[in-house]
Image 1: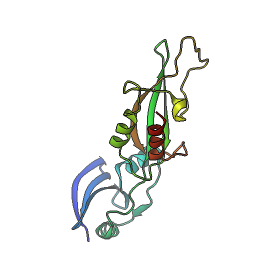
Image 2: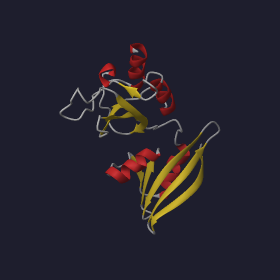
Image 3: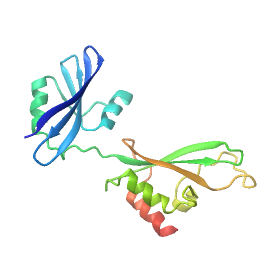
Length: 187
């Protein structure tokens, strides 16, 4: 059985609040979030990203309650390993042409193996040219050239910016770890 420890309550309006709770049992602890609407509708979020997605895109959480008693009963029995949100990894990069104009882009990979941003960054940096550049076609990534591309003035080098976790759907069929293994073998 979990113990529930409130960390903070943020009031958005007098009748709407977000509660940040820590659930603790003998082995684990976990932060969860509850959006309380007028004391009659409690929406449960297992991650800050799902809470943000709710406010930005209006995507309802899978779990909500009409009474505080139902919510408390759920929280006490909630398995702390349950419902962990599957986050994909987004690779952000950019192209800078000869005139210093920039084109930004990203590719989203599934992340079933839960590779951390730090691990992904370390693995990709090992294969960058001067710890910054890469040629997208060598990694099967879409180039971000401006149209029309002038090979006399422009080059093929793109700049790695960052990795980030996202709830957005993967737009590359490869899993993040597979992509990173591929680039490790290529160069």
